[in-house]
Length: 109
Length: 384
Image (cartoon, rainbow over the protein chains, first blue to last red):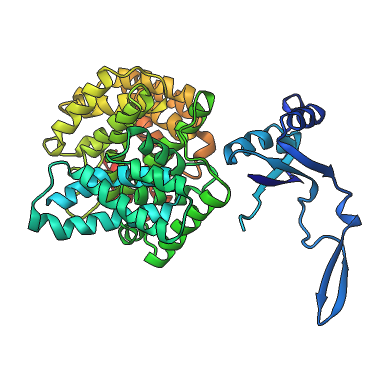
């Protein structure tokens, strides 16, 4: 089962930094186990461009599609047996502590 | 109760649990269990109740599922697996079902509804009525939960090791919420919570918090006929007619607690409830034991409400002065809970400072909505 993991900031992060795991260890472990298929850090929302096509015309907006305090700063694509495994992988990511992580399963079409 | 109703209560969870394991389809499982019971309703009065009702129902439900799957041309493996189920589910299937229904990735209200529908077999319309929503809303809630289980692949599994320790409290919290909803006015839910706690106790006999929770439910439930007066107002514990308490339920709970170690908050709450339930008169209450259990409970669950109850217990056990001392820990909730002021008033009166107590009773009355509670507080002020 593939899950898209959106890595986001949060306005109330964990304050005790000693509890936050290391990102390099997380990547190395999950790559080695075949659970992380891809992933990257994204440029800030100020670099985002939102694209719509309406009536045949391409409409561009500077910025992300929603304006919130929390922003998506990265993503990972996971291959896990089930949601419990994906939750364990997500909970070990530093941004689950310093921010928040959304797990979205691929649609089964 | 007729044979089909009994069978429904006894076998629903097993039927659904097994059909879900084999087909992976929650809706199909429910539909087939429902069909089997409908068939029983038609046949049993005519042909007699079969010797093994559970096995009979499973066979009918399985055949129905096979028909549906064949028509949907599902791969052979699943069909072969289906054909193999002859008897009701092994116990594990129901345990799997409970843990999946109570998975923390589902919203709490969805967990409660799903547990009632799939494990306990309560109809969607009855659940909707108990939670004061329309049947359409409840159907949507259940459908959404089932879709999420499938789409996000929430596993159909009992967690093991550390994961079990993490997840079990969440399951118990669902039962606790269900029981409280029942206690506050929908008796059917309290009965279901007790049935589910019994089932869970059978499935996990070594988990002390499960059996403790069952004991706690039985003790609370034993007062169901004494908790309200004829006007429907709540009657405080010390003024309840103890002859109306359910002695059999109390005896069962006490017996459970005798063989259950104290390993968590439900064990402590149950022991406190047992101290109250076994006192012949309010004056016989073993407040010293209660105070000591509250000391433990306040360590495990340092919440303001527990701190308040601890102060009350210590006030009875070791004198009003000790109670007032402990009441200091509840400063934060004074504004939110008028009860705190009422407790302070009572302890102050018993400590002998009548003037201050009178003021405090009036203050407590002023922050309480018009009703019997407020009248009682004003009466106390007038007595002093």
